[in-house]
Image: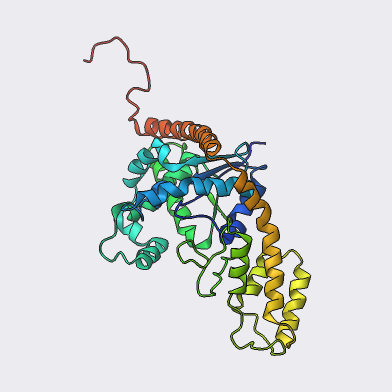
Length: 341
């Protein structure tokens, strides 16, 4: 049977952290053997935020690729490519823009939320405003059948499928394929401060390449229950970051369940929990950090170049089909020797 195609990726705006690991990276490692997987370093999308500081994006491209390979994403099984190096994606985006109204983009709840979060006000960059169309180009260029996303990204898949249906109907073709979301069964990992999701820019995450000392420091600074002053005091599980991380990463779920009961009853100190979590995370992150330290940048560049060439060929084929359907493949066939008239 033909393997189903997956497209996923990350914006290179910083190193990846445990939230990425539990939310998407682990599943990519698991899916790469049974699926035809494309993983995109979304530098074009990142530049919609960092157009005034492109070096931040450039510097993080190879950091992201190193993180991918260090967690077990295999370039022999997964096509890792850089978005800006695929010209067909930009041309597809241009054609798709004709199929989407401004009012439709304005109704996108994800875009609305991000515009408010970034404080753009009335000065929303056009590139940022239209990035859902660019995402549709990414998805359809590789004819992805599955796109791993969080629930907040479901509107993006919906818009992409709307574009597919409208294009196929207008141009009487079936060259574009609809995609289905592949939802993670793991909720978003909370930051170590307990105030928001773990994020690259919020400095509230444990990064995959953090040293053992930094990991321990971050674990012991985690928010627990402010009213749990003594080990004998009853404690709360809800909002307790240490238990959130134990739920996500500790293999022995029965032990975690038993610890919760003991904590709620009283008689279990925060230090004991943090010590267990530190041991758990050190065990997970040691081989990842060791693998990362063995990587050579030039090898990453060469590996990614070959994968990007493959991705470029696949996307160009889709673009050729799109242009043929629209009738704008003027030099698709060798011209005859007949006169113009």
